[in-house]
Amino acid sequence: MHRSHRRSRPLGIRTIVKTGAACMALLVAAYLLLIVWPQPFFAHRTVHGIYHVWSDEPIAPQIDAVLDDVTRRLRTSPLHDPTRPVEIYICNAPWRMWVYGMQFSTRYGGIADAWLTRHVIIRASDIAANRIVPPGPGPIPDAEHRPLSYFIAHEITHVDVSRRYGRAMAVRYPKWLVEGYPDYVGKAGDFDFDANRARFLAGEAALDPTRSTLYLGYHLRVAYLLDRRHWTLDALFAHPPAAADVDYWLRAVQ
Ligand SMILES: [Zn+2]
Image (tube, rainbow, N blue to C red):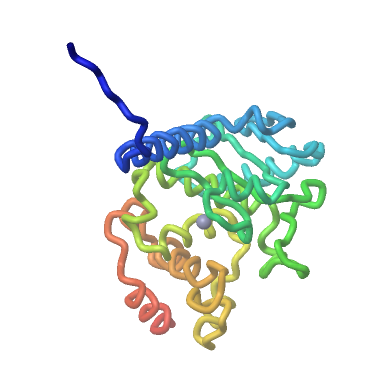
């Protein structure tokens, strides 16, 4: 006669690891669902042209004027397709910036998910005033040149770049190009090249990306190559020169 004799034993390491891995996989899957389908968690929505705007707070009617200004800015980019819909999520609650921005920070104006969803995430905003709500007590740096419409156009340009030059553009191309071009499009000509070059030559911190969170120094390189040297955008992305070379040319230009 065979007697099965099983004693209860403490959980084995393998069981614990398996259970842990299954829980992690579930959490990752749940997070991916949240990222890919954020709509149920944003109670307010408006559509204006190609723009589908979602927010966790009521959307002021001035959004239409803000988005028209975004369109004006995006017209400066040959990469932009004015018929392709764009999804924009305004995250007024800080936790939403954490979850949907995937940055573990709330101290930035906006972000585009160029890898997966191509959604644009924008921080808390005062739509009626066409500005983002600063993360700190004072105004954001360079506030007069960076209204809310700048941030939206900047982030949409990241998406446009990823569509043309690949989802890996952020790792494939130098940061001065990856951020300089969206700044160039986002500003839509609201950039005094000679004045900013003079600030660069004078060693101003605002033009030095190692000492500033602004992209003015990156923008200066892009504006120089596109507007002064008349490079095409495809040529610029095909063979981006070394930053040190562009800075050398900027110093040498008459
Ligand atoms: Zn950017």
